[in-house]
View 1 (cartoon, one colour):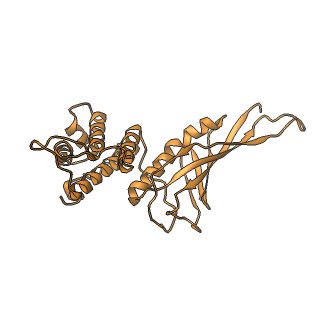
View 2 (view 1 turned 90 degrees about the horizontal axis):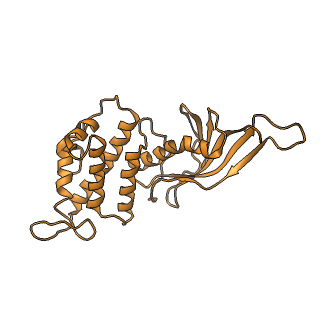
Length: 259
């Protein structure tokens, strides 16, 4: 093939056994780089620019798919979705003379852009790709920490502290809590309370830290509050990455569960 061109990429939608999208209306939309069609659990992304290899085309859509999966999980409060690469449509823009060979072929593979573990949920339609949410490197780091915590592989306090430090560093460095509050439109008291709650309370599961000479586990209300804050931090970081000009509504203590 003398001038290969990737026309489209095909992915399979995966949700796990408890999340079903059977007989849903097709979802169609368009981005700057490709057109999107999701129907019968099959996703086709038709590329607008020229990509000579499957790998280059996949790199173009990776952030879009990851943003879609993470935003769906954050919005629904469930595990969400994942997309498994199946094949690429490739043509030869300078085909050989008739009879010398085929002018197109399909590449197959198993690269995955994943969401999280499934839960019982039956939405009425396919989830829309996020309009203003980008899975930036900061978002991916925080989401990975959160997923490890949900899977029992990382203590609650460690996960939350890592996410807090991540947005502080992204806003200006080690002592950038107030800068992070301003950048991401979060009441600084939310960040301060998160820091306090995850540095003075804990146990073997949530992260052992000294508290009045001993340890105590987080209460169920504290666990719910910390999880809610972390999800909002990830959501806001993705919103900010997608649109740094919008004046986002400030996240305050009133937006969080009662302690």
